[in-house]
Image 1 (cartoon, one colour):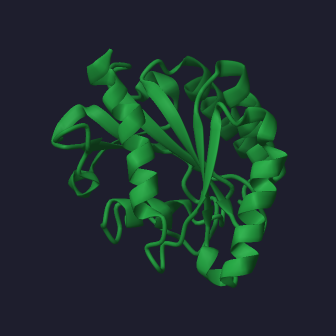
Image 2 (image 1 turned 90 degrees about the vertical axis):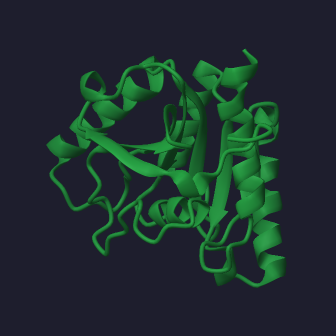
Length: 207
């Protein structure tokens, strides 16, 4: 890490945990990625770290049932966290409830968590899952940065309209929530997203 900037290409797999008790020690600083299945979360993580398969992409949405941790800058004190996706997963309701319980425990109890990257398809933003995550963040006063992914699927004007519409709907949370357009295919919005993560992770050193 140099001058408050982290080289996200240094991301390396650390561990997968099915529940909070098996997560790495609750120290240091981490940024978590959450998103409805099919929103492009894995592709966003791979694009931001400039790695093709750090986060596994799957043709079966919702396959990731574990909390996956990645170290940064060869330092286990800095981590990215890939949270289980929700939405279209073809799994029994009992399994979904288990996922939700473990996710809730992580979000409410994890002290190292400094910010949440919430991934939404720009064509279908603010789903029920997204609203649930924003409600949680509001309760915990946790900063959220929204990536409106797959921006390349829309014409520039339509993508900007979606961005402005989301910002309007979240105006009451503007001190906690920020929003941007993102495209893994075109590498659009990478610098902006990395700068936001730098701000959260490097607060650890300033504190």
